[in-house]
Length: 166
Image 1: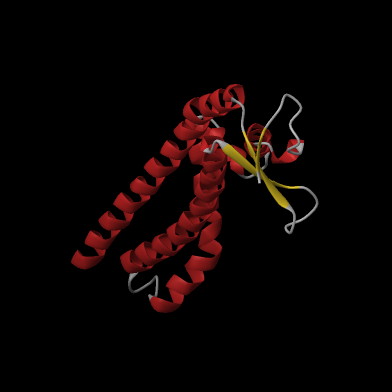
Image 2 (image 1 turned 90 degrees about the vertical axis):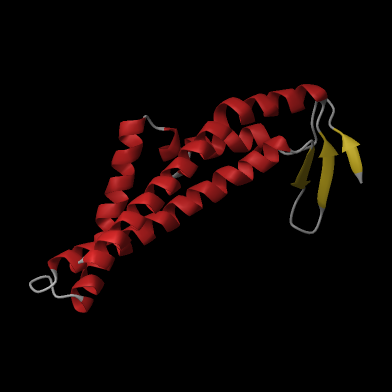
């Protein structure tokens, strides 16, 4: 059943797309993408550095740092980058979910649980508001995450080339 959202929307406040956007934007992990470039990169380097706690011992077991220093550094960096890419993928999926909620002209919501969901149509004013948030707030964040993925892909390819010649 589809109904038009009236001025007093029956959609619970925490399930309205604009409010979901605000909640995600203010959450601890997802707010990192909204930071200034330097702070954003600093957080990513922090995650990458801490990922060495896992990837470093694995790389050292595979390639002795005393004997194969370059291969140790490359494999440890690749492992740490894999963890960071999984981290970035989580960020991307969260922001992409908000993108889809804002872009859709219908709002699916749950009244009290998963078994009693409803679908309501947004008013033209709500559609316009959500599309503005989408265009000027969410799409730039998704673009930043895509650029970050492409940058890591480039670094991994360079590492692979170096690995091939070492």
